[in-house]
Length: 358
Ligand code: NAD
Image: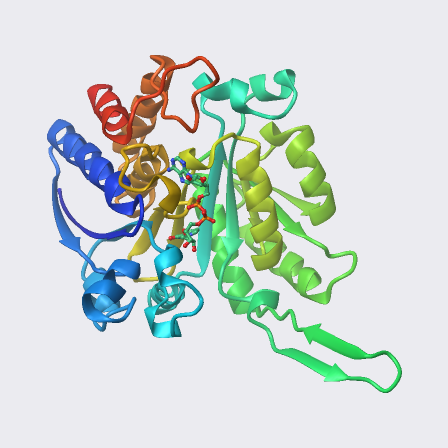
């Protein structure tokens, strides 16, 4: 098969980690007989430097003409909040998500077996394994609702943020979660606060409807406070966790912390129709940029997600994930995951070690 991939290399360590990821994708192409065409898309601080704006005209169209988008990271102190919005890299990130209609954010949190010691939880908990996927609604809820701040007569200033969800928004993210569960261990845990919030009661009604339709997938309701607790008590019980925007923001960070380094975790953002966008969860790490120190694993595992979810090539995705695990088991470590006394290699050497295991 032939696939076209948009590459947003971005700023800081972005170009280094995307560079290693492209070499891994090409290696998969060689092994499984696929061809990849890459379209370089200028976005972020580097675009501001080159053409004066972080999100040049035509960026979304270039991405839409591809089968998937791979993003390194954008941003850095050079393009700070003193700059006009059009020059700031964050503006570009929000714009691309909006233009591609990316309403579902997928954040897997898997403990790599060779790094079980990096898990901050009890050894017996880590030994049971952690492999869950947080499916977070990304374009609705309280972060996008009407906000207000006003003076009251007797209570000083008062502020409000409105949380609103429609059946349409809940159903499309719910479907995404059930579809993902079918590609995994077939269990969905829907997280809400239905004992208090009206939006959560609507959320639950829609999810129950979907649970009947996807009767081959096991389903449970979990209250958000209980979910936060279960994530540190027994994360192995979760497969797909689906939730609204703010709960997902908080729980996905909690889920990533229990698996160790920020340099290891991939993510995907998806909509309907347009290509999905794959990116590591970390930022552009300006402190180590250009020094061959960045861990390329989060970016490489983002490519594995691209194979699994955009190209529907599970064997190729398994091959990448397996190669990462074998390279780690052989003892290869970048500085961020090396323990005291362990020697560390650079971005390029880690990429090479992973490719050698494909
Ligand atoms: P960061 O994730 O870039 O860095 C946090 C810490 O983790 C740093 O010490 C960094 O060196 C380390 N780190 C991050 N990725 C690593 C990797 N792959 N290997 C080894 N170490 C790694 O977060 P930050 O410092 O808060 O943000 C830096 C810039 O990135 C900011 O401009 C921010 O806006 C931007 N950012 C971009 C994205 C994105 O492009 N999606 C996401 C988050 C932050």
